[in-house]
Image 1 (cartoon, rainbow, N blue to C red):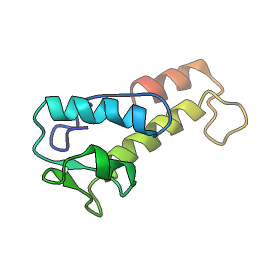
Image 2: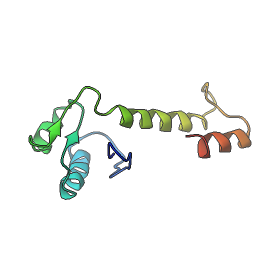
Image 3: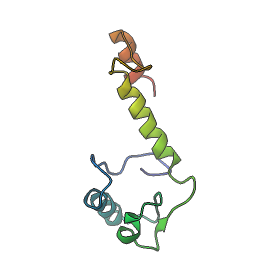
Image 4: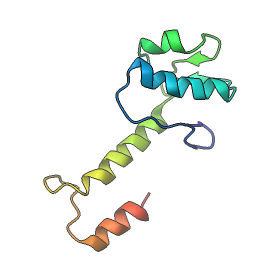
Length: 99
């Protein structure tokens, strides 16, 4: 995700293993990224060049917030959660027009 524009640059669905992270990192390197901010997972050390790699304390907060929003919206479809939307109208309003 671009930190300034909040635009999603690349998306890979799956576990955070080396093959999936290589896909994302290769896309970022091809786009000539000036800085790549990650958490402190060990796999990033060998995939991202040291010149552009950063592990700031609050560098990925906006990404984690987007993940939380997505998980909350998906829980509206599951019956046994506190977020469950019973009416179709509320489900439509909450998912498509709220956030």
